[in-house]
Amino acid sequence: MDADELARACADAMYSDDRASGSLGMSLDEVSAGRAVMFMTVRDDMLNSHGLCHGGLIFTLADSAFAYACNSQNQNTVASGVRVEFLATAHLGDTLTALAEQVSQAGRTGIYDVRVSNQNNKVVALFRGNSHRIGGALVNESTGEPV
Amino acid sequence: MDADELARACADAMYSDDRASGSLGMSLDEVSAGRAVMFMTVRDDMLNSHGLCHGGLIFTLADSAFAYACNSQNQNTVASGVRVEFLATAHLGDTLTALAEQVSQAGRTGIYDVRVSNQNNKVVALFRGNSHRIGGALVNESTGEPV
Amino acid sequence: MDADELARACADAMYSDDRASGSLGMSLDEVSAGRAVMFMTVRDDMLNSHGLCHGGLIFTLADSAFAYACNSQNQNTVASGVRVEFLATAHLGDTLTALAEQVSQAGRTGIYDVRVSNQNNKVVALFRGNSHRIGGALVNESTGEPV
Amino acid sequence: MDADELARACADAMYSDDRASGSLGMSLDEVSAGRAVMFMTVRDDMLNSHGLCHGGLIFTLADSAFAYACNSQNQNTVASGVRVEFLATAHLGDTLTALAEQVSQAGRTGIYDVRVSNQNNKVVALFRGNSHRIGGALVNESTGEPV
Image (cartoon, rainbow over all chains, first blue to last red; front, side, top):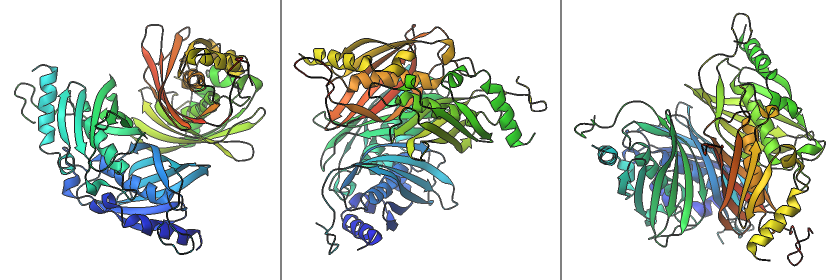
């Protein structure tokens, strides 16, 4: 497997067990080494008291894309911290896209940037996450099967 | 109404329309001027691929508590940015408590700290949010009715 | 004056009074609308107890570049908050370059990214700053003179 | 040595080599396990173009206090990232105090909060830093001598 095939195998191993992303209707559109793209459509059960998409769920979409990107190199990795900037509101029916990309990786520690934009390519949120590798692999690198 | 009665009226005006917090099973336990406490029990549809509560949903609980705290003074307020640190994992069935408190308020800009802890009082996440008042009131200060 | 000439006039108005940047040997290499580049060479009075450039002074270089970039549109602007990631150490004699660029500007609130790199183009720090316009101009837009 | 004596020995080992903190006139007022207090008086070579203390130097004071606090347990430790909020301006002649306290320590990773206030006890900045232990000790725990 090359690096992008490995990223896909890691994502497949994760996705079937990722009930949170599934229950929020998120779909994984692309994954490659250090990179992932996810979608989510804003549903009415995601609206806050202002009638806008809850910021926590915009964050959750970004955080899922971050998880797929930072686990794409077959090392179990978790988020240790994030800074997010909310730039625009999201509305019922909007389709949000989160593009996550690796900025740096040194030892067990990584930085990933995630940009969330809407169907008009307007930036809704900017997210910069710190990742930490906790040991262990996601898949067997020969077979691609989950370990 | 005193400041804490006003905070409660603002919370009541928000809560009935807050479908996101409701659909995630969050309950508002306390609210006073600049302060809110919310609960959420980790359900199986909140678990990620590691079988742990998705960090985005821990964030969402904190972000909801932040929203009730920063809107408690009857000025419409939104989150402009947040830094969150994830300190411990949360598991199926854990009951998480988010305590949000105002740290500063100057002009339209505020800072709020939120601590998320589990039923054993272990800190799961620390969240520091920047708020921005966007104009407008939530309730009529004489009657407490939503405006 | 076009936008870039205005940026230069704002920078000129700032630079002569900017004793902190001057005393740390910072030079402003470029400035245009929403963008600035500054240099600093690491001196021995900038070293910490590990014999490395103090992180605070790496931050200060980035913060100065941020200040020139966010004041380049002739509106008095201050930093309200920053997140910085320290990625590599800087050593005595290194020449550090900070490139600041506007990411967004909405109302009085902006976001700027600053990348600090060394003479080998290695990234030393990533800095994302929140700016706030406080009212007032820096220069007369006809003459370019400080107001 | 008890934990606080060890903290003092670590601080002594650091301070004599800490030219950056020294050249900015910072003094270490207190140090104990996971905690440090530093002072700095705002000099005219610390002023920016607005005639206010440069935010980078306020950050630097906080970052120094953070360094003494996170190295107080005799494990070489560096800052990996920081979020800072600037709440009030500081002026020529103000004496700023930075109080740094450990919030958490897990494995090699820590979180420290630093509050910078002025001589009137007004909060100037809030700083939350992420620390990373890089291996090695500062002092011999029997003699307190630098290693």
